[in-house]
Image (tube, rainbow, N blue to C red; front, side, top):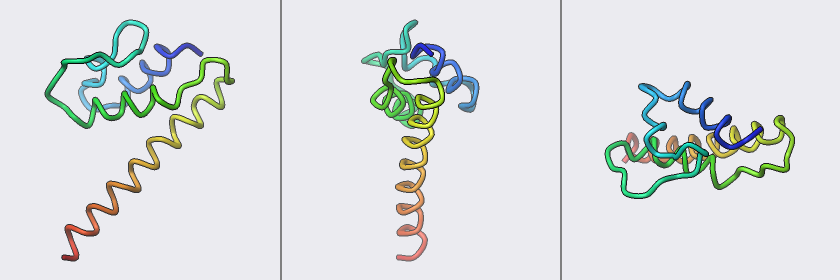
Length: 84
């Protein structure tokens, strides 16, 4: 799939679709947009792991892997905030 197709899936899943303002019409992250740093992070994480030559299944696997890694990191921060 093309990057923009993957980003449209992200946009559909992100609350309010706010990720849409952090990428251009090709799905490439844009600079200078402020407001929702998590939406920006999600767009950049998906973009950095995207390889157009890979199969759709592999692209989706890599996107899920990036988000799961971020989720684990955020959970670690939450644990630290709750226990200290």
